[in-house]
Length: 116
Length: 206
Image (cartoon, rainbow over all chains, first blue to last red; front, side, top):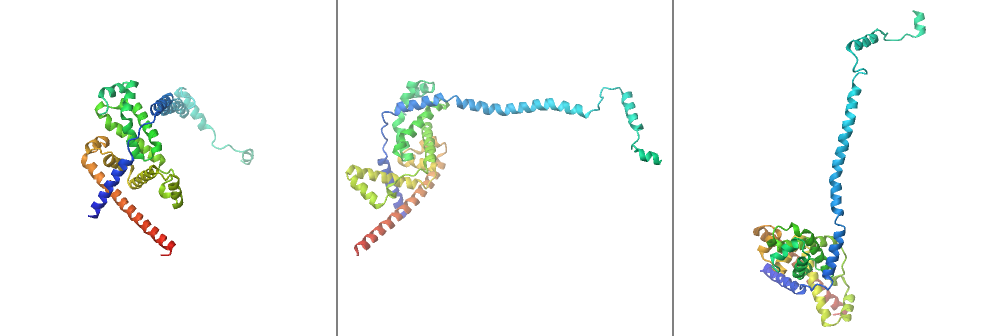
């Protein structure tokens, strides 16, 4: 009962609101102002697409730089891991290793040699 | 429809005269809808122009001319949401915020019948604004379009792109919230009236 009463009052309020908010007549400058706004937004309308283009190109550029860096850096790293004379014949490599084996493991100082 | 589909198609293809025709046909209706949605007469033209600016730039996205009206309403509702979001916290001098002396002074200054009518209009707009502050922006627009603009459920379905049952449920809930706010408002008004009577009686020594 009370809810119905409230709903009726609310209905009256909507009706009153309808009456106090009639469709207003547009001012004489409505159309010129609208076209001025359209023209103003047209002149800066290239900024938006440019921003979009930059935003799309940025990750692609970063990925390209990374890929080029990797391309340049990885072969150098691989060659650094190989022996100093990668293209030397097997016999020369073997001889160099034997020379290393023949050298004394510890160099004796002068005093120690005299004591011996 | 206030214009032929052909006018919409011509406007879509970039015909400025057709766009002008479109704006002239719909501007009054859009001004009225905006007025009811935002409730501030001083900003109605600005928001309405924003609607037509958006229309100008998005006309080519419209699939068929037949869905133009619901689509224009959607643009209007979105522009009103954006406006409300930006201006929600803007301080506004309401009649209810003025002191008794200020109201009395305003009444003396503008004692004419027209001024009193205007004051009453402002009060109704404020009251509805207060009621609608209790619902979300979406429910606010839904209530305005249904209860004040008098749009049918079919039209609202096309605008909000939801089925009739979902709309009915949302409308019911929104109405309940507004009704609750309305009852609270009435209680508050009643209390204030009683307080004024008491103060008046005390002042007179009754």
